[in-house]
Image (cartoon, rainbow, N blue to C red; front, side):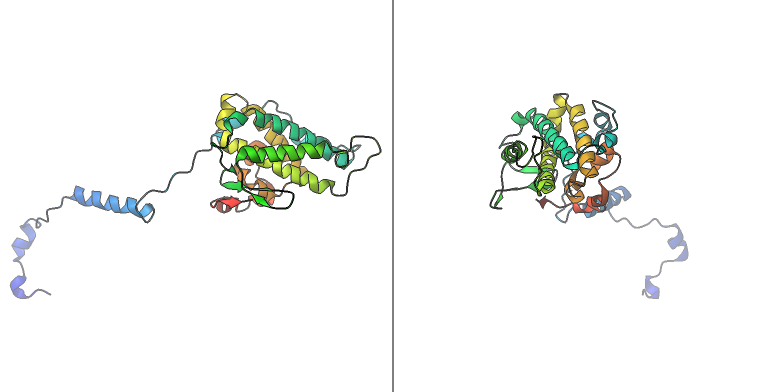
Length: 260
């Protein structure tokens, strides 16, 4: 507290200009702005890297289809068809179409460009017949998928085509496994090779194939919703809604790189 000797006369206090500090208002505001900008960045002062834009979600591309057919009606089991026959027929067809779709961009999917098999922030590993976990490039993974599925769908003991032959008890489990692998391939095409697909003007085919496939696996619960959550944003646009229970909280779960 100042004593009497430090007090200013009344007229001086009212009329004298404020003391000079050497800092203008503009300088002070600029300094405050810098502090606020740093507080929004990471602790080291650097801004976090922005997420890569998902081109395949652009409305001008998601509207592209080769047909406007109602796939929900197309995937439903006809009353006169056996369930296993329906699963076998559709699974085989999806395998051929997804294999064909991948072949259109395969020259761009190399061990150098795709050193891991990934879709967005999910990295996939292959498991061999002994259950050994293998880290491989995307083209190696897709080759494993297509080779193993080709072997299954051409095996009469697994996918019987002759009259009187029965499906094995493990058939539905095998179909689930096949569909999960095929989803990985579709997800990789979208996340890593959509620009090439766009350049080839095949995005309408890809969108149609994806929508048909997703609605089919939903209809018969062939792929866990947690597995397809990585593409929930695309599924919501192409199929009218996120993929079931797995969509709850999916955004938060996808903030971290996962392995499968």
